[in-house]
Image 1: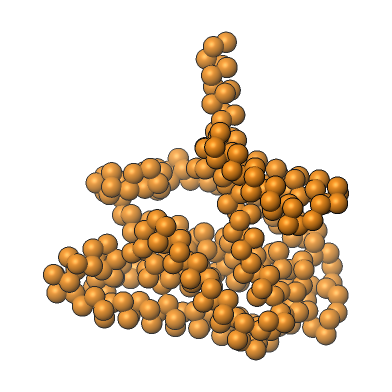
Image 2: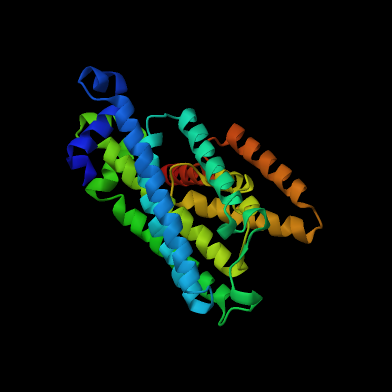
Length: 298
């Protein structure tokens, strides 16, 4: 709704072309300050809500999982002002900017007593065991959610909005010429992605019952995601599944053979380099093209 207001139009103008926005009489610095204030305020509200929720209802049993589903909503809302601030950065600059945002979030977590600082936070009262079987519950949620996500994405990509998303991915300029609101669509996808990532992290720590800033913000999380996408196949739905299976299989095999974690990451890096050199699009696109060629010659 904010994009339909005067302030929303000013934010979009400053984000797209700040020089032209300034020529039109828009106070660019004022817009930047407003967006930064909204971002900080929303992040503060999210932190206060989480702290209140945790203090009112201790983390235990199924209630702990219910709280895990509240986190994506708050993170998705907080991602909107962050996206408005970061979207003027493009390509590598956007990646570096998001890395800076993650570092700022980590430092704020490290100095917040309610979040355990460097010692981390135990997510259960008095160290008691959780009631029920949280691992089995989380596994069922993840399996069902993964299948539902793949099916939902395949249906979504056939809709008008899905086609607009594909057009934005392939050629943003052409998509804009065709009438696609790139700015709004990008922001929606950014917020949904942030919420999905938060849900994955919340479910993961629902089974560990302990969280530490040094563990949650470690670079290996990003490396694993990059490995899954690069190895499986960029721009595909089946590729990440193949990349995930290969990463987990490699980790379990190397662990069973007695290799250390450092050696595991070295092997992962080598596999990623070889894949980028010989199969730049990933395993699934190469396999899919081979099948199509075999059918064509048959």
